[in-house]
Length: 188
Image (tube, rainbow, N blue to C red):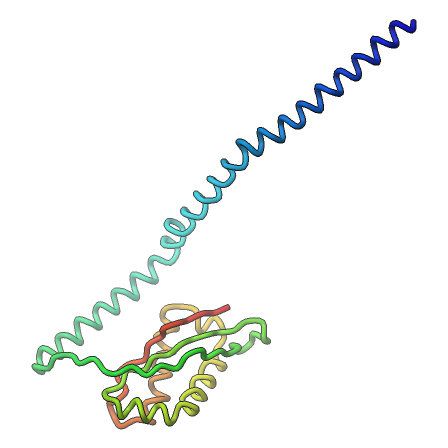
């Protein structure tokens, strides 16, 4: 009887040693094989989302915006060819880091935009520098009156551009503010 108990105890000890080796072997094989496979899957998912899914979702609105921008550029170039003028580039005056909480965000979101104003000459830049506080105030009023949904689309950016242009053009002589640009446009 004692021999039978000793054999059973030896078998239990042997099976416990085997199961311990199998568990550590499984951990090692997961680290060795599973982790690289997991990383490859994450990279593939990122690439698919970034280069396939997102362009398909937003492709129509971007292509529409690009088509209208192309039509506007063609119309502008046709007008300048008809008048015999070559398009001139103006001077750029920048206002950076306009940070505002949009309407109805209750402080939970913010908008950060850097603006560039294309003007005819250096005297216009000097005027805007002297009136920079007023320009910032115009920008803050316009941005804080809009909700996030009124700021996040490509068409919304064009509407904002026109509103800013209308507000700032009164500070300059007629037709001296040529365009408004966004050099940074972040909604968080």
